[in-house]
Amino acid sequence: GEVCGLELQDSEWMPLLLWAFSLLHFFLSSLLVFSYCYIKVPLIIFKKEKWIARQLEAKQLWLIQAPTTLAEKWDGIVVPSQSFPRNYWDKQVKRRVCKQWEGSCCNETVWGKLGIATGSPFSHSTKWDHIRHTLLSIVDVRYYVWACGVVLTNMPILYHIFYCFSSFVGLHWNSFFFSLHLLDLVLSFKLLKTVISSVLHNGKQLAMTVLMTCVVIYIYTVIAFNFFRSFYRQATPEGEVNNCNSMARCFIYHIDQGLRSGGGIADVLQPAVGKPDEFLRLCFDITFFFFVIVILLAIIQGLIIDAFGELRDKDESVAMEMQTKCFVCGLPRTDFDHIPHGFDTHISQEHNMANYLFFLMYLIKKRESEFSGQESYVWDLYLKQKWSFFPTGVCFQSKERKAIQAGTANPMPLP
View 1: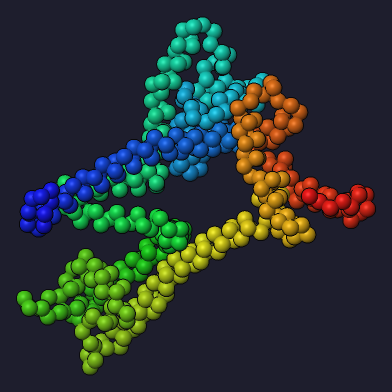
View 2 (view 1 turned 90 degrees about the vertical axis):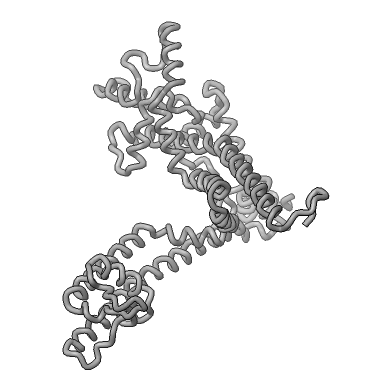
C-alpha cells in the first residue's frame, strides 16, 4: 500500500492504522462518559431528590415510617444532610415538613432527623451562622456519599463507564474487547432493548427457578455419585476417565452435559441394557429428563417469552393510547371526528401537553406570594401529587357539543 507517498507493506501500515482508530475510539468514548456525566448526572440527582422530597412530605418516610427496601435505606442517608435538596428546585421541603409537626411533642425529634438544629430551623441569627451553614453545604460528606451511590447504581452510567473501559483495555491489551462495543447496537433499537428487558423483567422469578434447577440437579448428582458412578466412564485418547469420581466434578458434568443434551444426562452415559440396575437407571434417566428438561427448562423459557410478550403488548398499548386518545382529558379520537382534523387540532392547541408543562414550570419559578387564586389551587394540588386540576373527560368542544344537543346554545359551526 501507499500512505502519504510512502510504499509500505500491509504488515507495516495496518497495525498502525488500527492503533490510530483505537486511540480515536478511546478518546471519543472518554468524551462520551464526561459529557454524559456533565449532562445526565445532575438530572439523575434531581429526580432522586424530587422522589425523596415527595416521600418525605406526603408519606413521612424516614420520620415515622421506616424504610423497607435497601434503596430507601440508602436514600435515608441524605435526609439529615445540610445540602439536601441541592438540585431539586423546591428548597422549602423541610420547612413544610416542620410546619406539619409544629406544636407536637416530637417536633425536636423531627428536626434532628431532618438535620436541623434546635431553635429556629430556617433562620441564621448571625453572619457566622450563615457562613457555617454555607461551609457545611459545600463540604457535606454525607450528601456526596449518597450522590456517589446513586450515580454508581445507575445502569446507563455504568454502561458508559464499561464502554470506555472496554475501549481502554482494547487499546492497551487486546483488540478483542472492541467487539463488546457491538452491544451498542442493541441499545439503539427499541425492539432489541425489549428483548433484554424481557430477561430482566421477571429477574427474581427467573433466579429462583435457576436456583431450583441447580438444587434438583444436585440431588441427581448425589444419586449418581452413590449408585451409578460406573456409567460415567468415558474413553479418551489419554485413557479412560470417570466424570463422576468426585461430587464437584460430577455436579459440573451434570450441569454441562445434562442441560445441553436434548434427552437429558442419559445421552452421555454408558447404556445400562442387560445390567442388574437397568430398571433403576431407566427411572433415573426418565425422571431427570422429565423434571429438568421438560419442566424446569420450559419454565425458564416460558418466563422469558411471557415477559417479552407482556412488554411488547404494553408498548403497543401505550402507542395506541397516544394515537387514539388525548393525553390530558382522555377523550377518544372518535369524539372529534365530526370536525375535519378535530383531534389533531385538539391535542395541538386546546390540550397541548407542552402547555401544561410550561404552566407548571411557570409556577415553579414564580413566588408563592404572587400566585393568583387559580395558581394557588393548582400549586397546592401539585405539591400533594393530586392531578384533579387536569380536565379529565371534558374539553371546550365536548361542552359545546353537549350544549348544542341540549338546545341551550346557538348551533354555530365550530371553527
